[in-house]
Length: 242
Ligand SMILES: NC(=O)c1ccc[n+]([C@@H]2O[C@H](COP(=O)([O-])OP(=O)(O)OC[C@H]3O[C@@H](n4cnc5c(N)ncnc54)[C@H](O)[C@@H]3O)[C@@H](O)[C@H]2O)c1
Image (tube, rainbow, N blue to C red; front, side, top):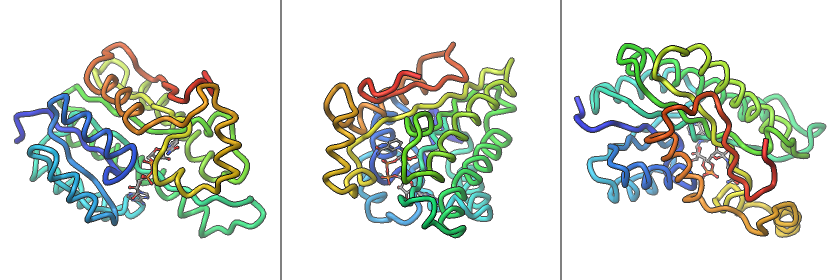
């Protein structure tokens, strides 16, 4: 059993997840770095973080989620903070999309629900403490053309935050969302230049955010903020205030 508090960050090899790992490690937490396929990037990150360990799983596959939680039990025996950061998007107009593409985006919501359930049951519920932080998105609130399945999943994630926080009422297990606006990561790097310019025009601060600016809000919810529960905190340079 790990003596230090443990944070499990999903989809952690890149972007916002990696920034969350670095920031939570700086706060003194031991980090479980979850990744799906970015083995090399995950190993590089693990080398930076003291006493961290890696966990590989496709969260859309419930057997792999079961195996991940088993491995967590062996490696650390506890989870104090769960950051549900993994996200997946396929851009495209609704009329051209097929069910397989919808399932690829929505499968992760199912996996997030299942992983959270297992982490709660195995590690947080009996102990009566813990923090769950869901990384949703501003587009789950504003909508975004070309992202119908993604925005559905992100809106559902904020509803998950609200319902679960109420279900756990009376226990010191706090559930919140962080909803980033447009952040400089591989996800936004792939956007065509004209779309990027259109996005920048919608951001009052005139720039995209950095993964570190999201991670510092995650760290606040993970280590302070004892009376913030069921909330969605927007981190978007003034685009949308909720
Ligand atoms: N970058 C942005 O502008 C932005 C804005 C709002 C919200 N977000 C959200 O922030 C989170 C992190 O995104 P990012 O920008 O760092 O992008 P990213 O692509 O670097 O990170 C997403 C991670 O999720 C993982 N993932 C996807 N499907 C998975 C699956 N089935 N099983 C396991 N892991 C899976 C990927 O491997 C990847 O590491 C995502 O939830 C994303 O939707 C990002």
